[in-house]
Length: 129
Image (cartoon, rainbow, N blue to C red; front, side, top):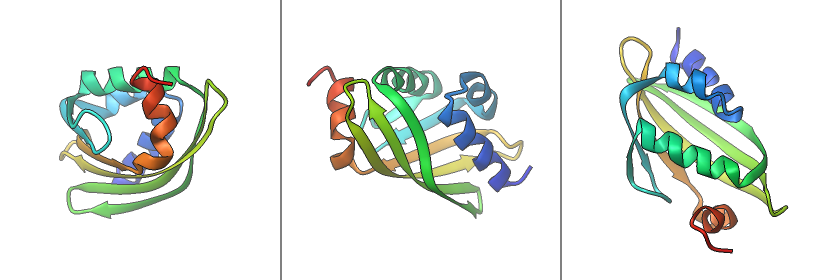
């Protein structure tokens, strides 16, 4: 399986979200760094954040998806299009730098998202209005 194949499966699993597929793709000891959230997370911690995020979204899609292979994985650039449960439409530019081990498992994700358009979701997740 190529890096682009893994990236395509990863985006599809995130869209669902298909947690079973994500658990299958992501190594148990994987680490996650997010520029607008808790900076360094384990796989279980990231899944917990994903669950909280999704609880505040009515719709979710990824647009303008671009994938590039790298020496140790891939980079995904995309726009997250979502509507919050409060009816606020979001368009958040995101870049994911993903490291994959020799067996095709994701071992690290560095996530960069534009915090300004993510503000309504961040406030909802953090308990604000």
